[in-house]
Amino acid sequence: MDNFIQALEKCVADKNWYGALFIVLTLPDICGKIEYPSKCSTQRYKDWFERYLEPHYTKQVGSPAMGMVHKFLSGSDCYAIRCALLHEGTDEIGEQRAQESLDRFHFTEPPQSGCIHFNKSGKALQLQVDKFASEMIQAIRSWLSEISCDNQKQERLSKLMKVYKEVRL
Picture 1: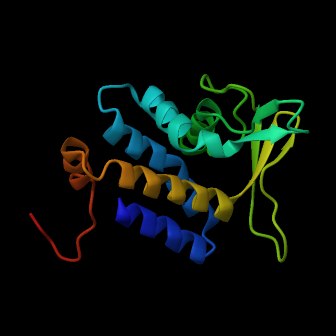
Picture 2: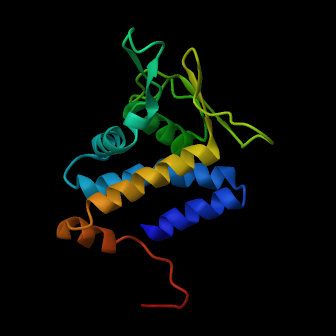
């Protein structure tokens, strides 16, 4: 998993925003397969996201007395953007079966100063690529720590693809 995290960090450092998005949106697939190997890909993606990232994207809106909690990004909508990007090259998810409450994503580069992250307008969510990647890495590291003593999951982790420096057949 470290190789995938390092690749994502390198994409962010190199400002390779499209490479970063392709990696960041596929990582819950990989983690979900390790965590829930018997579930279908859609369900394991959503379940992993909901457990490890959705709490970060669920915020108190208004005063605490009002008790209004808003989910900015669900596992279903994240899976929908993954499908839209990987299979269609688009940020529109209104036609995706997995789509829950959003219709579109707007991914932004980091601005010169400040932050453009977590903005929602209607059914569109704006996310800053580097922040989204950082949040995903943090969730994965937390998950890796949680499963560190699970031998079955560690075995599945050990079978992840590697790129070798020399030919090995």
